[in-house]
Image 1 (cartoon, rainbow, N blue to C red):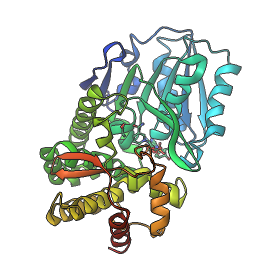
Image 2: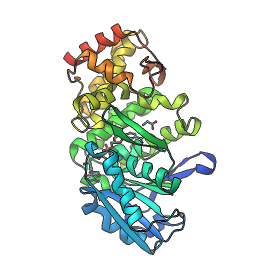
Image 3: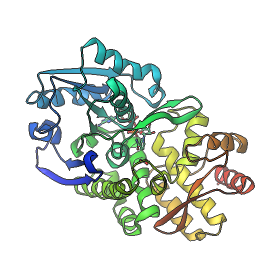
Image 4: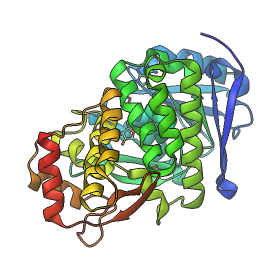
Length: 366
Ligand code: NAD
Ligand code: GLY
């Protein structure tokens, strides 16, 4: 592993809840990465049985410079474990080890670990500090940033949770080298997302650098993580609790969450569902007359080249409508979609059920 200096810092500006996102190679091992965090007698690292064996010893060693007692809780891996029962293992660990309200939690893993650790930190003794240490591409470009924390309910994705900001996000790009290929593609979905909603120049850059990203070229990954975090910081800085603008970050997620819940959590990866969901949301945007067919074709091709599915699973139209009615954006039973109103710009609005049904049917057989 290379121990090179910090490459970039992106700031999330939220007044007293502001924090930095550190992006670099070899950050995990450097005690300086972890300096100036809230002081505490104990740190608890939350990880899973895949990521722990790869990285927990290194994080423990680096944290020794700052905490007298460092404990680890290892959760079972997988989206299907993003639930109450598994969340409770974090509380069991905190309580049995005598954690107090200053104890700092470190989320070492992908979005599932980050979302659950953040939620545990929001709840334990009504709130303790936590640090995000994202180790997947998806979590470095999206889930570790912005303070959304949650677990799933069998009826709906991320339905139980809290807005709770971390004290720091540490993206060690070296950790991406051990990711399975399928997970790299899943992360690319959330990177691609930022183009149609906010930055077409970034979409052009992704298009031109897709091979380098898939090959995990360090320079390409560093730029993709930085630009994604900058766009997310720009959105979250204006609308932390999603009273408006922040909903655009859910482009592809309304259809995507229906795919995840409909197939059973963990069957398709979150990024795969979002990739296919973006094709469906773009198709709906086109059928509403907002964008042209050329844009949808371009996006579909890019998503396919990223290694993501573009044909939706045939759950049946009724199942899609049913799952989308429990989406958090729904209001009074009306499903609201993130739509592209022109390349690089998104809006949130409803659409007639009949038209949505046509889009679902078309996308299941495309
Ligand atoms: P994940 O956390 O399940 O990680 C994917 C897989 O990669 C897991 O098996 C994990 O153990 C493994 N892994 C992680 N790091 C690794 C590494 N460096 N080397 C080898 N294997 C590694 O999935 P994800 O894609 O990171 O996150 C998806 C989750 O994030 C979903 O639950 C989704 O709802 C959530 N999410 C939240 C937000 C938010 O704003 N909070 C945004 C997007 C997604
Ligand atoms: N991933 C969507 C959000 O953070 O709002």
